[in-house]
Structures are given as C-alpha cells and as structure tokens.
Image 1 (cartoon, rainbow, N blue to C red):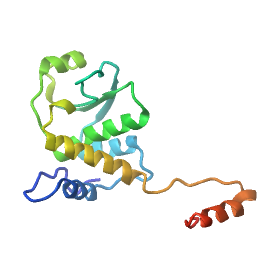
Image 2 (image 1 turned 180 degrees about the vertical axis):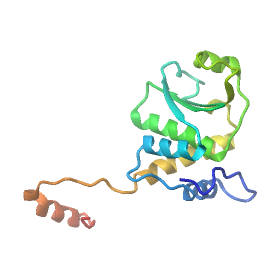
Image 3 (image 1 turned 90 degrees about the vertical axis):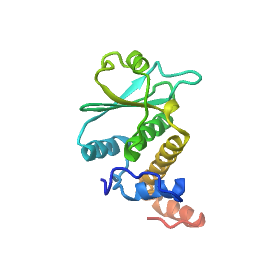
Image 4 (image 1 turned 60 degrees about the horizontal axis):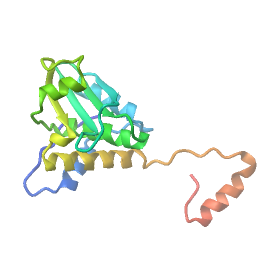
Length: 180
C-alpha cells in the first residue's frame, strides 16, 4: 500500500502538493471501502487499527474524531451521531494524521474519560482534531477528502435488465457519456 509512510512539510511545497504526493504513494484498494483501506493501512503499519464509534464525542469545541496510538494498536474514534459519509470522512481524517506522521501532546485525563478501558499509562499518543496545529489539520482534512474522491473515481457497475440495455445506452450517449 505504501511507498513511504509519511511526508513532512517541505519548504515551498504547498498543502495540495504535499497531499497529492502522499496520495500518489498509496495503492488504494479497488473497489475502495473504508474497511479495506483500514486493513491495508494496518498491514502497512504492522499493527491493528480498531475503529470505535463514541456517542460521547459531541458538542461545541469537542473533536469529531480521535486517533490514539497505544504500544500495540491504533484506535480511531469517531462521532457516532452523524451521517455515514461524515463518519467515513472522520475516519479517513484520522488515518491521514497517521500517514503524515503527525504528533501532538494531549490531556491524558481527558483521553482516559473518553476511553477508560485503555488508561493513560497505555496511551502513547492521542491526537484529537481540536488539538492539532492548523497545518496538520489542513493536511489531514485535505488528504481525507482526496482519499474519498480517489476511492470513488471508478464508477460502480450498473445492473440493467437486458430488455432495457439499448434504452439505457441511448440515454447515456445523449448525456455525452460512453457506456462502459
């Protein structure tokens, strides 16, 4: 999946260019699903990634996602009370922080309140969206959006009853597209 696991900001290189460079280093699963992407990322990192929906992440100023790296496992937490598409964006955003190698200092007591089963002694690094500097946030959000877009570049096959194939092909041609 990876040619390299992290791309750090280079002087003079713009946000979009950094994200494109990192995206180009990835081999995305086809068909793309968030789960298959997570499986590939976990394999590339040599450690499991566990996704946890957290109902308690909500409200003004609260992060909508959280990445916690313990000694052996990466935990990606996301807001539970949001749309599936937004959940996917949050999960990919947290994965983008992993791919960029972002790091930050966080409040171990706050993390322990969110995930009491882990305890602060197990947590090596916790990255909440609200704690990143603006460059890290911009990189993670941009790469997550690019991953979503790249994952949906290949159109899903359309199943059309044989009796209607000719009609559908004419409609597609009239819209300026070529049936595949």
